[in-house]
Length: 70
Image: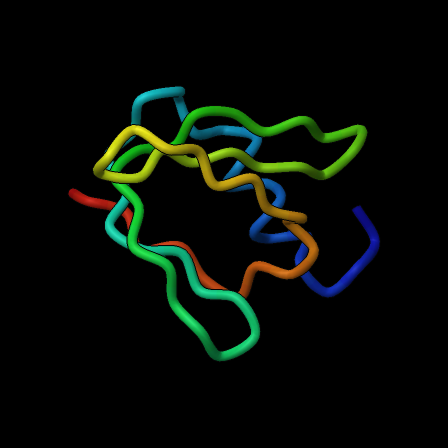
């Protein structure tokens, strides 16, 4: 995790599946999501669930921010 998003990678690695998430932000755009599903640190692929149940599969290197419900 030596890239610029190492903090995002650490957050993803520690999130529990099902954690409520409002939005993810990638390269200046936002994507509404409902929940975090998974993160594979070896491929750096993060998966989120949208409100309609569809999955958003993201290269975590491209994530700028994650809005997590508290």
